[in-house]
Image 1 (cartoon, rainbow, N blue to C red):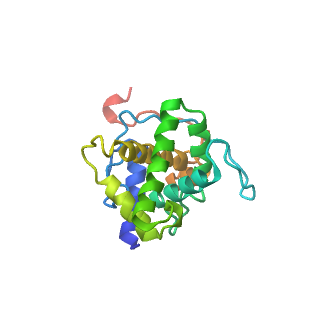
Image 2 (cartoon, rainbow, N blue to C red; image 1 turned 90 degrees about the horizontal axis):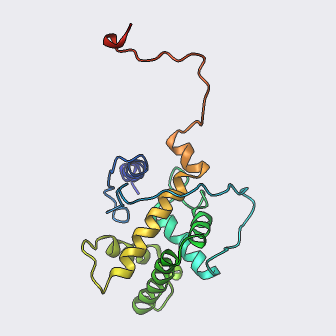
Image 3 (spheres, helix red, strand yellow; image 1 turned 90 degrees about the vertical axis):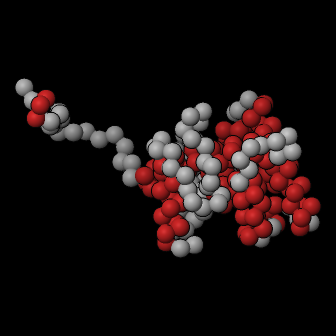
Length: 199
């Protein structure tokens, strides 16, 4: 991945999280949901790096697929990605606490993903090469007007993108990337500096 592509990807995701609505030029992040209708969830608890957390909602295979998907959406490059931010743990927590309709979107989507992978390559999605995985996800991201035939994968892809972005940018890794310093105390508050507003 070139430096320009990495910058485009990072800037696009930052645009989404701060409500700018920027869309990446990269295939997997095309059509990222706009802030309208996009609800951010609570911050997942921070887990020490050395602790490997077992999934609470997904089975092990589904969890591995979620981990791969999040890592494809926000990959590791010269900066940490979804894997380092433990977005898979966040998604497992959030989906496990979600209404049945949302859980069904994830479960149906994961089943569809393995089904199409088996049909094309006789392997599950996690067993595919990176290129094969990207081809499938790029096809889904290019669906503009979902039909009855592709509504499952379209809903799932939108849900996994939203959850990945939420999970990444509510993690310490994502907040560090945004340059968020937390609440700070000011010695003084200068107020408005516009001349027309001065007393």
